[in-house]
Structure formats: structure tokens, C-alpha cells
Image (cartoon, rainbow, N blue to C red; front, side):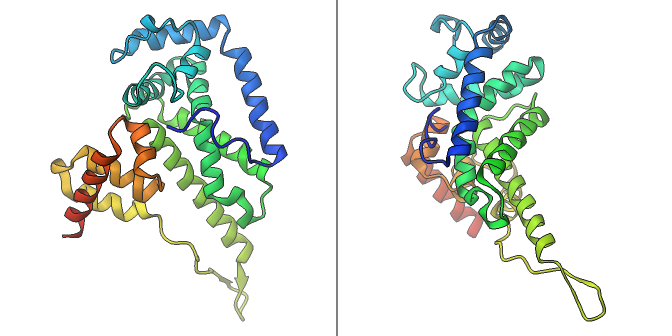
Length: 253
């Protein structure tokens, strides 16, 4: 998981204002009585880590705990994020806490998609759409148990926005043939790598190595380095590298 404040210093002014506004809003709502009630739900339900022993008073404390320099290790942070997604339907501020935690990753997705420049979108508008889409995904997926909740959500966000951008490009490029019929342009985009990779992984069935799958998924689909994946999963970069390469060799047989 990316650092809570990472990747936010080089955006354009309008996008920086949006992020600042979200942070300011979070500072207010995350310390309220409602936020204390929400964090109590998380503490009671999260068996992997004794959050109460860490003196978590409200959701503001919890989100700070998800930063890389906190008292939690990488694996524990990933487990807490997974718990937030699972509990999101129980309290609206739990979903908001998850959104706040994912904001650096949302900015990374925006950069990977060039801030919507290829479809003529303003960066601020594109970022607003990404944030909205992220929250929609949290609502849609709320209640699910996903060990790699953060990378799963961010990958789904990237794929969803890329499909939308492809649709916008097709609409803009739509032309008519000599008889007035619409010509569907050929997309210059590569197909989503997860579509074929997912099928290959499914064929492996129950023999699937979860570490290898996570490594291959994160590396080939999300484009993260093994070092970044190690921060997200709590598994060493070397182990992820070896497991991912072994999984790739199995697929390519």
C-alpha cells in the first residue's frame, strides 16, 4: 500500500486542491462520535491484530496506523484494509476511511492513465471521476473478503476507467462509411492483460499458489514492482519474485 501522502506533491493545482479538501474534510469527520463508533466496529471484528492495544480512539488514528511508518507491519496493514472492505456496509464512515487510505493509490492510477489527457479531460475532472469511481467500488464490493483489498480495488478502478476512456475515444472517432453507416474504429489500446491472465490462472484450479498468483497479478496487471508489492502484502520482495516467476513458468508450459 502506498504511503498515505505519497504521490500528491506534483499534481496540478486544481487536483491538489481536491486532495487538500478531502484531507480537510477527513480531519473533521474522522474525529467525531460517529467515527469513534465506526472504529469500535473495526476493533471488535478485526481478530488478526489487537487494535485496542494500540490505543486507536477513532478512524483518524486508524488511518494513520495504515501508513508505512506506523506500529503495524506490512501484512498487518493489508489485513486491516481487508477488514475495512469487509465491514464497509456496516457504517458509512468505514468506507470513507478506506477511501482516504486509498487516495495515494488513486493518484497513481490517475498518473498511469495520464490524467485523462488522451480523451481531452481536465486533470481535476478526471481525478474527481476517479475518486467517485473508487467509492462506488467500495460500496459495490463492501462485505467481500479480499486479502489484497487495496491492489484489487485499484486494479478494478484502473480497468473501469480505461474502459470508459476507450468508449470516449470510440465515440469521438466514430465516422460514417460511403453509405452513411457508422464505422467502428480499431482500438489502439492493448487488451486488458488480466483478461487472458485470469483465464490462465483459473485453469490451474486448486493447485494455484496464492503468493505466486498475487505476485503475477500485481506485477503484470497492476504494474507494481516486487518492492511495492512487498509493502502491500507483507511478503518479502524476493519471495514474491521467485513465486511470480514460478507461476509464470507454469502458465507458459
